[in-house]
Length: 108
Length: 355
Image 1 (cartoon, rainbow over the protein chains, first blue to last red):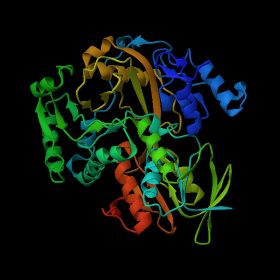
Image 2 (cartoon, rainbow over the protein chains, first blue to last red):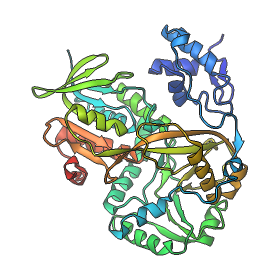
Image 3 (tube, one colour):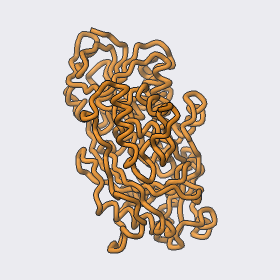
Image 4 (cartoon, helix red, strand yellow):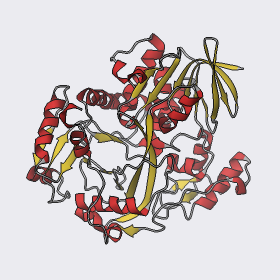
């Protein structure tokens, strides 16, 4: 395979970029992800986790079975924001301004 | 045993910035250690606002202001960190809060932070996608955002270029006072150093214990939603929401004390989605691609802990919330302190000795 072969199709990251991250010191898929955006797109690494771990194994001499998988998060596939709020009345998330001025009055 | 002038424990945004700024003097042999890898902790799980205007008390706002002012210069030196001074809007939904907003503006004006208190119409004219249910907002031109991944990566690259050694995936197991310095025992050997800086973020407490020092901080989990990339439609950084350069919208302002547990939970994500739609109704139709959570460090009085560790000559700490905002000024000041023994801005208010 050519160094310019795309590994992460969502974010268009090629082998060369992944190997550059490994040279910087990255040891896991998630290290590489944060340096290159590989795996940050809509498929959330479902396509690239395998090939990337292979590239890590080839470059570091580690066994494929010893490499950690990526951290999976909600949602498994993209869902609309509104789907999450069907049974929520009020948000309990603090507001930036209220937090600044409410807590101890004006003496903070 | 390998000997260094300075060992920095923690290669997040704060530790990496200190390493870089200290390396600019080219006077010290520096080792930067991390138990994991840069961006695996707090600095890689943030919305990365460079946020100034609601930071109180005003002298803390002032420190944040000076740090924001350093970003354009920093970017010239270490490379493009996507610093974007968008201006920041902190909306309020209740007319009763307007009075408080004016009080905040008055206090912050004393240190040169210019805040406008906007009417609903003014806010909606500036940021048309905000909800018509808001009552108003505070606004400042000083706030913005940065790409945290680029920022930490480039701090480390620039530091290495100046000769800083890095040792990652290397947990510090013990720290022992030794003569004029410290012995730092790690998974990959023991190092001697004259000066030691704890920059472990939420893990600073554990590092302090190795030295027998109590670091009064809490761990606070923040959960964040990321949407699919959308057309650029948010001009400003909104308190709780930002749109990145590539179009994704990040939403979240939750705070939970659950130790080091950084899972995302459906209940808080649902609350965060509600907040998103309350602020920007059109986000109801946006696809969520991912959620994430980070553990933030929160000093008990919420203000940075910075400077020498009392009673331990040569040992220093830099532990703070808002490390992204503060990293340029904190790196600058800590480099001054270690090189010249004093700082150009007075940091005694931030001393660990206040607790």
